[in-house]
Length: 124
Image (cartoon, rainbow, N blue to C red; front, side, top):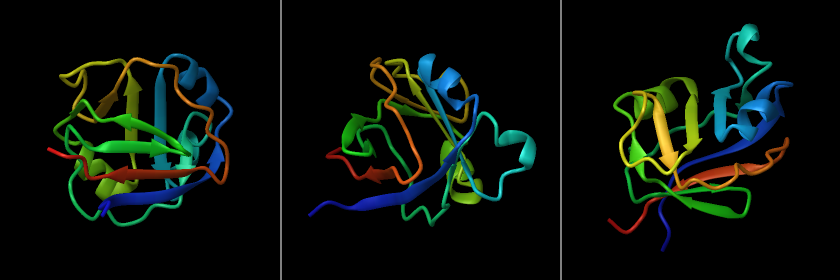
């Protein structure tokens, strides 16, 4: 049985979010995020984080699974409190910044309103 640690749905995608995605970065924020963040963020219907995100978990964006390679020191706190998640498609096994969650270096997926984002417990 698959354990879902977090599940949400994309509400809107800011005008500059595609530019970040082209650089391999997806910036998610809960819908309560300040207005000044909306243009570069992917706004989500923030839900409860059931358990911490860990390396080895699976990040699902739409139907595409991405193995989590590393998790920054404040990434879980940001996700739990703000619905804030920075996903970097950089292949790093050590986070560049404390809020980063890194996945393999592949093109970031196209994210649109209605896209479901899930974090699944991996086999650690």
